[in-house]
Length: 274
Image 1 (cartoon, rainbow, N blue to C red):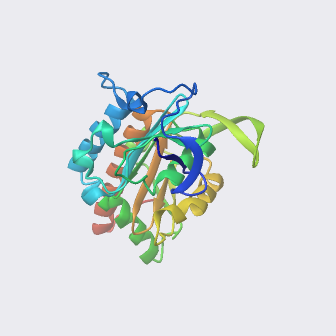
Image 2 (image 1 turned 180 degrees about the horizontal axis):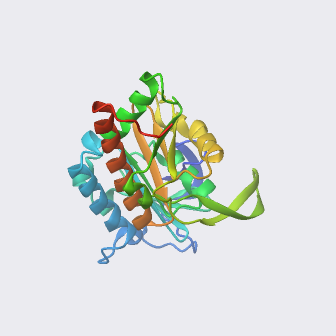
Image 3 (image 1 turned 120 degrees about the horizontal axis):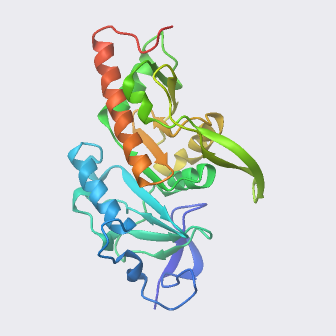
């Protein structure tokens, strides 16, 4: 008997009435087919290869961090409590993007506590990929913003650094369409930041349980429409993009910028001109 599927919209472990073997066409097919493909670019293979790469960069040490990809009506998610450098496609969860129900789940693993936060990026920014890391440099800049009197505590800001060009400028609002919770902006990418633009990444406070970050992360996304990332103080960062390539390159660019900012602080160099 297939075990109940799990909804991650209102709680990571909330049971639903559908079965794990259901696919988006309601056919009784093997759910493992969703994560089995020889294609390197299949989300199940990409998540594993990305996590191995992120491990070598020190971003997902000790089972921390996570990655999720949305493709069509399916959302692929790394599990909780798995060493990311050893993760295999069989370890992944697959969610129905419309219902928020798991249609493929490993027998012995738990869904990631990051799932509600990934969903925020998919729902509010129509992202195609979301990456969560425990980057040392991301954590350090949140501490510097908290401790230095001349910096804002709730936002990281830097300007006139070449790598800023690797970060998307934000979104143009095309229209509003009605949703269950009111109106949701339909958006498009509005180009990348320029050398003379100021990069701003909002900072939210950490909580004892990761899933409890959802409300403040959603609020930060709404308050900072130009942001493609949110820093979590003393914790790490969430970065998203329209697809895997954009999310990955932005995550790499931001980590470079954070490392540079830490080194600039050591030398007494300001991050902004005023």
